[in-house]
Every structure is written in structure tokens, then in C-alpha cells.
Picture (cartoon, helix red, strand yellow):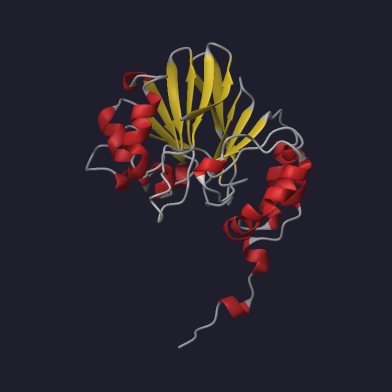
Length: 259
């Protein structure tokens, strides 16, 4: 079932949260996103082979495959773009991904499938026209991948944040946003361990927070777990801005040979 994040009649943003079913215990829950603007569509972080068939079926209610213009990948992980070969085979779409990964992601594909269809995003980001709107790739390097981007939809003012803001929860619990400061702190136990390990350092978290505070953002929507609106957004920014994570927490004890 799709969660409608935004719909003004011409521009719609949808989140599919339950395509990785609970019976696939080995796979992390992942959200996939479809934006349709004036009949043109893009998928953000469409995920891997587990979700390809159910996502294809789910999206046809809103967009035919022939009208899928782009894929956007925040980074190169298999839960982001593992089904790339199938998407390139079944559609005419192109993939936007960091320049760092543009020569790696063709390894997901059969020989020559990706030729001319991978567009590298420069480190500073870029804007891409979609229908009557613009989708911006904005820098999120080392959060958590070396070449990492988030995607900002100008019309809905939604920031699709990839792994930043992720919570490790079951799909069935993702029915509504985290909306208040108290609710954010109540849910923090589902986020804290993930961010401490997957975000590279407090330094880049602070750079990211400084950027986002200067943007007009109506929702923070991560690739895993629940999304945030209202008071939860500044609460999350305050928390992540001060979080010691990644290499901040490592010492020589983590780099020791133990035969």
C-alpha cells in the first residue's frame, strides 16, 4: 500500500514502505519513492531484486513504465539500486548517481546494458527537471557513503534523506509521521545505534545540519523507517548535530589483531 506524502492533483509523491515483507527476515526494511509530475515519473532509491516485482505492480496505479524517466540513487548499495539491470531492461529511464559510483553501478547490469544511461552527479549536486517541477540532488557525502546524495523536491518541499534519519522498525509500524519533539525522543532508540555506526563523523553531520536549516523543508523522509514532520524535524537536527558517531567513537582497540 502506498503512503501519499503529497498530492496537488498534478504533482504526487508516494512512499512504498511494505514491499520488503516481514517474512524476508534477512532483509532490512526499505522505503521506495515515486514522484509523478505532469505525467513524468522518477523513482528514488528503488531498491533491489526483492522489491522489483512488487514495486513494478504498485507503481502502475500511478505511472506506466514507459513514462518512467529517471532513477535517482542516493548511493551504490544493493538495497538502493540492486535491481538496476531489470529497470534498464524494462524501461528507457536513466540513472542519476554520484560520479564516484557511476563506473561501479554498471556491475549490477548485464554487459552494455548501462551504456549511455548512467549520469554522474558532481560533488556539488545538480537540479533535474521533472514535469513542471525540479528535483535537486544535494550533497550528503559520508552520510554514509563517500559519494552520497539526498533529493529535494521543489514542489512538495520534501527532502528524501537516504540513510540520514533512518529508523529500524517493522514496515507495519510506518503508518504516520513522527510529528512532535516528544515522539521523536520516544522513537530515538530505533535510530541511535544505526546513526552511531553508519554516519562517518560528527563533522559531516554538522555540515549537513547547517545546510538543511537554510532550506524550506516540509518533511524529512528516509529510506528506512518512519518519516518526520513538524516539531520532529528541528528535534532531529538538534540531536544529529551533536551526535558523536563513526570514526569519533573508534580507538586503537577496534584495530587490533586477535589470533
